[in-house]
Length: 340
Image 1 (tube, rainbow, N blue to C red):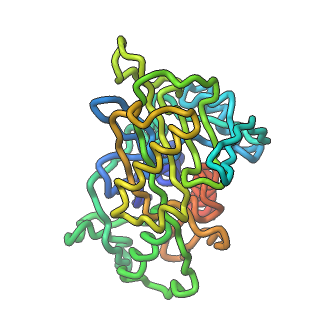
Image 2: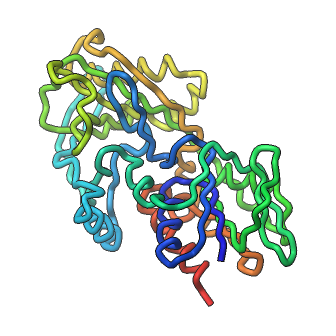
């Protein structure tokens, strides 16, 4: 059986890994130059930072066990050990409290997209391959169009794991052998600006991650403190790398053109929290995630599938947007593919 997977994020990479372990012939097509999707790591000449998912909360007992198994394989580490919650007030002051949670927290070692690289090792991965359409040919299977060119190979099954707005657009552009009520599957999605920056000094706190409430920035993470991160800043330099993620509402208002404003918000949030001058922050890098998460009132869509033709679509949006949901989607699609 030959299977094509569109998207090399968490769901696509882990699904490919599970199928490959069964001896299935898998090909993965990714529009970007690397794997990971929204577990993205940016490398710069002043350091690296995770501009996508900054850490991995584990809620269910299954996912906690799954992550602990990866920890034994030295693919992930438990981190951070301490989380703070910073509450803003009308006078501009910030009240910092310890954050208690029933979840376990992890990060992938070396960089946040490292697990995808591990799962895709030895699998046929085509980067810089934007899939623009699909078509089903009777007695042959599924054919994939990359950019403007239909590919020669045909596949028994095809799986789409891109964010739902991109998956929906791909389905609408494709020649499907069945009708799919796409108009009934509309979702409103929010964006997120993520900003990484170098701090010229060592921050006087033993807390590596903060949830900021009622503020423009929703999280602040000391990215350079994560386990097994390379020291790309310099051995003789006292410096750190932090990542700030803006609130979804503010990111929507700023839009894709709001990069400079997003950087200013991120720098201000750090300096206000730690009462530091703005000139303490040196280099910055920012990324706009257009499809960060569905609006809170949107219910998960579940898997989209037509078993008879061998088409499946799923991802973190299927079960609630998180890395835990992405793994759940990969497992669910694996069961559908291998069901008799």
